Picture 1 (cartoon, rainbow, N blue to C red):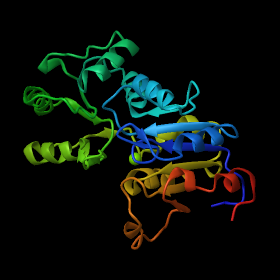
Picture 2 (picture 1 turned 45 degrees about the vertical axis):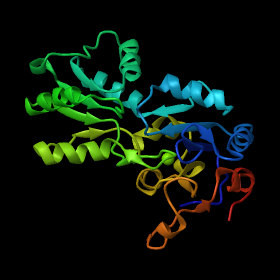
Picture 3 (picture 1 turned 90 degrees about the vertical axis):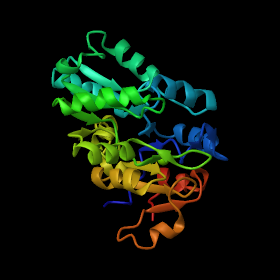
Picture 4 (picture 1 turned 60 degrees about the vertical axis):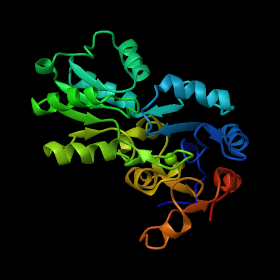
Length: 267
Ligand SMILES: [Mg+2]
């Protein structure tokens, strides 16, 4: 990989990288603001418990600079694929605000189809579901509906400790029915970076994230550069046995040598 060229775009993961449970890490806002003065900044998260609109407002409220196309969401990619495959009857397993976002994006979608007319079950990170909703989803899968998930993370970070995410729900469904999803959209699917890759070469993009199997893996698949933060999921000890190490490892986003990366000839 060519590492002598300056970085021309930076993509930040959210949870565990810029903030935890809505509270920015020390220096995160100031650092991102400084970066955004020099190059375009993008944000991406696998967390689909809230809508893209929520994340846009959330980032702006905390003071992070955000341009119109700055937020990369698995929900946007899932919706694009629903359109591409001309699917109309989608059982959406998602929090109410995400369902509302889907309905607003495409009022022609039937998001509450009968059991036998369901073409697709789309599972987002629903963290307020009832057992009945889980049964409704299961019955549709048993009747042969296609099955997509927004992402496959096992856990989601939380101040009190990680909590089960879609990857854990999938283990449950696999145990019960031997069913696995046909598609996922979030990291490490390189499609998550497609709006950035449309404008910049992979080696001009720096991805910043805290998780090895999503963020680092995405950067490997996309061919981008990568900076790991140790304030989220990954700890220094987790790096010992890695055959390929991240290019940059920093405690916090503010410790990443952006000055060097954005301007100079690198290392
Ligand atoms: Mg993260």
